[in-house]
Amino acid sequence: MRAARIAAALVVTGLTGVLPAEAPGPDPELIAQAQAVLAEDYTRLQGVTITPEMRENATFDLRLVESNLGFDTVVEDEGHTTVRLSADLLFEFGQAALTDEASTVVAELAQDIPQGAAVAVDGHTDSVGDAAANDTLSRQRGDAVAAALAQARPDLALTVTGHGAAQPVAENEVDGHDNPAGRALNRRVEVTYETSE
Image 1 (tube, rainbow, N blue to C red):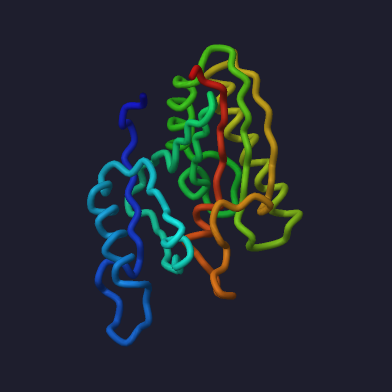
Image 2: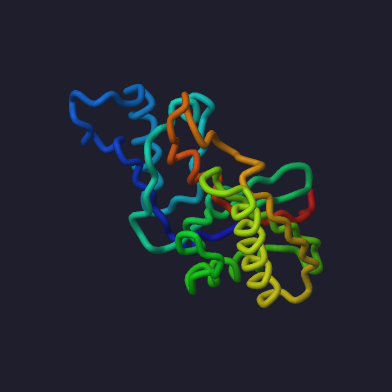
């Protein structure tokens, strides 16, 4: 449905075979699975399926190694499409203004939305920081994405909601320890619209 327009790649720190021998790490089988995923999608990452086992054991960090942006996840379910965009790829740290590249990505995304569609734009943060500040930031980021969509497609009916950290898609902590990979997945803006079945 969507041509590969923007390439992005993520390196899973600690899954590249450079962990010190004495350092405890994730299960070697999970490391091999993650390395296979990254090798296959290095130049065109449109989303990585995180299995329950990987999420449970995920304590590795994600970092961007190319400045180009991409879609994290596209989910089509019961006549609706949700595009889950990484806030880390759209915004500078702690900011709510889209980068120039991000504005281009959102404008391209808008072209796939049906004419006159009702579009829900939902901003989300991780659990770090003050809850009220996260609520505000998630709403501001949702507003920024909605504004870019409206500029590209004035026909769309846009509704924006900021959820703060209330609706995570991954664990912010694992066994009481910070989970940077999970937090990276939780920092997102979701764009949902109705599609024909």
